[in-house]
Length: 176
Image (cartoon, rainbow, N blue to C red):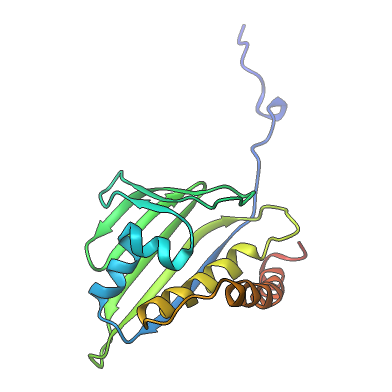
């Protein structure tokens, strides 16, 4: 007698919705300079505003300690690296990827940041991740330009972006 339950008796697997966040930016700085800003722990800490640690190798840490953030730290593991061109790390259920390429006009570079598989978290502030990455990329650009980062201005920019990202996310995944 086979004790294996019938397929219809088994509990179904959980089905969740995920989305991607894609940002394309242009910098007046060479790819090597942008690379250093995203892979050097001290520079990463400066533009993200939180302590960071980076062990730049496949299997190494890509960690940012979000002090006081109820969503937890960015506790990533590097899963792909092409020095100066591509950095990929896993963070929870998501994969995050930076791609850098020289600007065809020879003036700086183009960089892409992609957050693959962002799960719909079912929280009131669903738009916070999109708005947060957008604001941090603005701050990365400011760091590269040598402009000072202002915490109050960053919070205000984040708040303005939240409303825009909420509408954009709801247009893709439905009401949150």
